[in-house]
Length: 367
Figure (cartoon, rainbow, N blue to C red):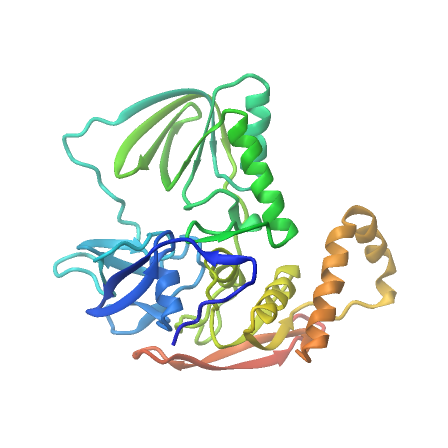
């Protein structure tokens, strides 16, 4: 069953492609990742461990390696970063005789000499900070090269729409801000290279990267490292089940690739992104069972931090209240001071996650 989301202002832009996953034909859209195409087809399990257990999309940003697959015979490819292509052969297991090494790099031809690049400023990371740093350096007259591992600029905050889809106009403020910043950076003359895997810094002025399968050595007068934000999930029994993923991964599926993370979703954690994800999924027709926030419910007894938030970030405070109103309108319970303590399901089959256990957090922070 397809889990693709629909929106009146967003339409598919990539042509349909067909690939095989463990011998099963799967439909995808050009410009989306293997993980997104599998999720759209209702396939939650992506990797098979040596013990036969299944793993699925977890972080959605190439950091956890839980979605490693074999693509056309190449082992240890991250499904969340590898684009789909016609006639691809994707397998959940390592090729015979291949060590299961989640850090196995894409090795260029042995006799290929690394390409040498020379720039004034090298920026690693094309999120809001990296884009802003590159723009500032370019405005100061420097020649700037910006490298990013993901498929599009914008990072975890802006989460731009993938090339598999197009929007007549930006559908929210984050999309609009991200697009405007990227246009400004490119218009200023910054060279942006996506899909670049920076794997070494030999010195503050010499960096090695893999770009399009070829080794590059970039020499620069100034190196700026802007790796961006990432989540710190707390493991609990069952956290490796396919269907358990971080908020960032669920947002990447929904915002970038227009794919629902599941038919019935429980969102748990700490921070405003959980409320935003819940509101966005509801708007797209996904059933949100509950939102669990580990922090205590805000009250007017906390007027000092609320006043400070209203002064320093009024737009974020407004967004938070708006998300809460949307959840209340759809009768979605928000359980303050609660967390997930266990996930249940089958790790050795295609079923994956079936249910979660929740608990209240006490005054000492224990569930």
